[in-house]
Image 1 (cartoon, rainbow, N blue to C red):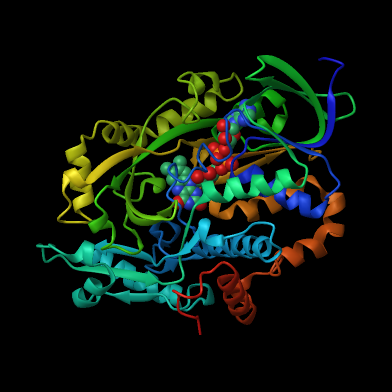
Image 2: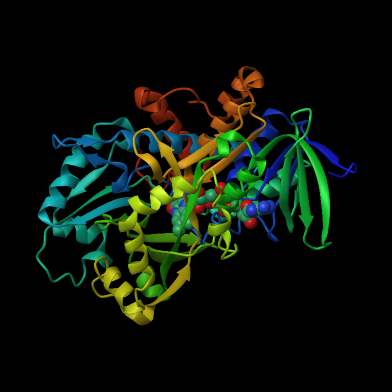
Length: 500
Ligand SMILES: Cc1cc2nc3c(=O)[nH]c(=O)nc-3n(C[C@H](O)[C@H](O)[C@H](O)COP(=O)(O)OP(=O)(O)OC[C@H]3O[C@@H](n4cnc5c(N)ncnc54)[C@H](O)[C@@H]3O)c2cc1C
């Protein structure tokens, strides 16, 4: 490696929501640290974090049916929903802190209040939703959730979905008015603007190519300047691999043992977007349905009002698909290049186990526009093909690893943080619940990678996230107080009912 290296404290690889969040947290905790960011694209938030590449749901488990399961005794397990909600509360508090301190402005540019709803059809599903509602509404985190199987009420809530419904199949929905639509692309760009104003060097069109541990335990990084077509050399004490689908490749390049026996499986997505503003205006909610049998949890169909560039839009999807790329702007060789001797058996085991997923993805890829319209008509019976266009969403790389519960080659649907034992490098893999829980996940990275400073940083963390270290579910008064104050600061209060 070259002697002409630039030394720095922290290197963040990738300018998506994860690096943006970690950088912002670290700048608050240790303002004097020198932070450098390398991003291979021209701008921040262009891959999965971009507003058109994800669904923009502020995942708080208010509508996603895959976060609750029915146990064998018929009761409903809401523990995952509780975890996701608690994590979203952390994001809300941090974003609110940033707005309060004027570190970012105009919250309406990245977060909007929007009812979150679950909708099911068929007697069995209606009974499930009813039981699920009973289990959830008792919990302070889901207070105020409404249930209805009354067609007149549903017509009030979701006219676009109820109009033209000819079958007499039972239908029911739950509704929570304090859900959100989040423009993660806008938030990412705002956070990078803020970081640059605090002296963080953000290098666009700079692709990280090599990582090597130096003798003193720090990391040497080779970056390719795509404009100047030359290699640049850096050294940092801590590196975060926030490269989205590119993180696995970089993790493998570090050679750390924690990065072995892990593979990735890319699942691409597309949405249908409504081009008829008259129809867009008839819907005001995120309505999540139930995943089809055999479908992976991230392909739960939903009809979403979105707020992008101050314009209301309507999206339906996602439809899953297969592409060997790990990033939307990646290479067709990504999947093959990720196969290494140490993860080969893990990947092969997953291939055997996940035949039904493979079959499902192939079926999804082969769907024609009319077949996709038929799926949309389960939500909007009167949907017309000419009112809808297709947009390609981001790539998700699902983690495959060996687990005690699932055995060799188990496909993971959550987010995974892999850290070196000395805390000098952390990688974020996986995609769900994703951007919504970025603050919680990055606080975990900080806790694991900076154990010596963590105690000293705790008061500042508590200033930013007053509930830090507590389960809000066990503190309903604090939950209410924080709900009200963050709603006020983020501009979410006016259109949402006060929880009481
Ligand atoms: C279809 C879909 C729907 C989703 N819906 C939601 C949702 O509703 N709500 C939600 O909360 N989450 C959702 N997610 C998940 C969410 O989008 C991701 O979890 C989140 O955006 C990941 O952010 P990131 O910063 O890790 O990655 P990214 O935003 O992908 O950023 C990674 C960056 O790293 C750069 N990079 C890669 N390799 C290198 C390299 N070698 N050198 C330099 N730069 C590099 C890339 O160019 C990219 O800009 C969805 C995802 C998808 C795909």
